[in-house]
Length: 190
Image 1 (tube, rainbow, N blue to C red):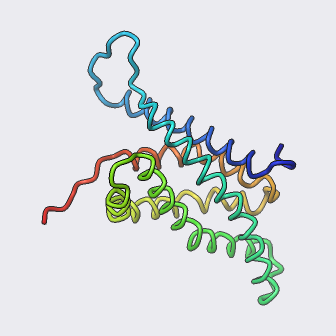
Image 2: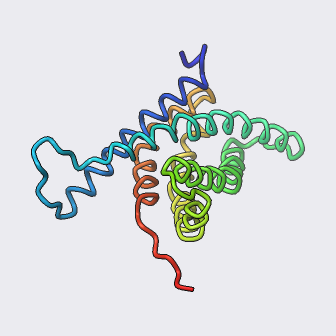
């Protein structure tokens, strides 16, 4: 399916992995906090949140990463023509730089927008609040996590498998994102 339907395969994989990551994140948070006794049959998992994460993976994270890696390769090819880049390590550094300055801010912003839309209410206010309070620390953490992951991705992983590789490592990243998104923000007093 990866060859015949790459976008669908990558989107479904992203949806599944992000959902799994959210469940792990919720379980980890629940175990670390003192939670009141639950009635029999009830769950501490917020299944609505997990469903929203699944939708985000299906319609945002999977598709954008699918198209991004192809675009990144085209951008890099053009740069390599203008500035003849022969060294694979230099090529990887150029890709890491482009990924950090173009993709990371876009994907983090888009994640907060999509999640705000899915959470309902006034999504514009919710998105603005998340961008104001959560964007910078999330982006800084992305710049700590993804360059290490993508060094391997850009240097060793063939293009058609990069989203799947990234999805595997995003099990950790997605848990972090769902946690950041679900934490309450402190509103400024006017």
